Length: 287
Image 1 (spheres, rainbow, N blue to C red):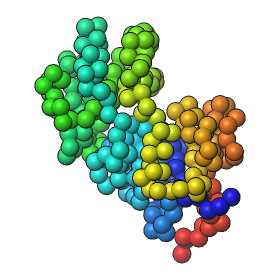
Image 2 (image 1 turned 135 degrees about the horizontal axis):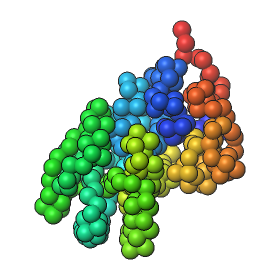
Image 3 (image 1 turned 90 degrees about the vertical axis):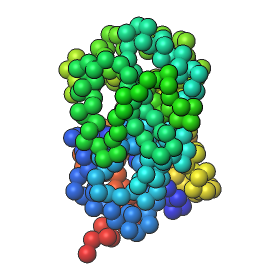
């Protein structure tokens, strides 16, 4: 295999520890990758501000993929280099559909100068939890704005809904039936929110593999190999492409079946170790 032009890692369950943070070893290695010019970046379902919080002071030198593929941006700024923007007309139709059923979404916005979340719904206990949870993020902004008054120049990245699993699963089917041609949905149980779950709604092409195609174009990578690391179903699209796919030991069986290699458990820092191994430079940054 030729020297990879790019290494791209998922975060949760792949690069990060179980508590959602970098180990000291991985932190040191990411800093070393940046110093040494090793082409390493991340692709995560997390929003930009959440990625920054997870990585801490470990700088990523290349643009990173956030919001499950909706956005590409530099590490130092949430300004999008590329964005799968939600269609405004369909977004307002969807929002009317949601509120008529008693759902009040949070909208992730880029207004041309900053990234922030807005809501004009009631202040529920779930929303209070979400607001408190997000406050720890460096680039977090929250505004109370009327959706109907949003300027046309603002770009919508995603909608987030917090509610019970039963209500959200029923709603998910309705959204996919009525809006599936323009939007996609992702669902997860939120263990931190007792009895709660989350539903995310985005542009239908907002997927990691599509964003990685755009990132490769932005970086003018050409035919050189791209190595991707992952563990969950939202990484599966990257594993089905021409890239060199590497699954961690704790990955879903579907990913392991498509992976060219399976490495250690995410708790053992397998991603930076494998990058070093592939470059035959493992441990070379230590003095």
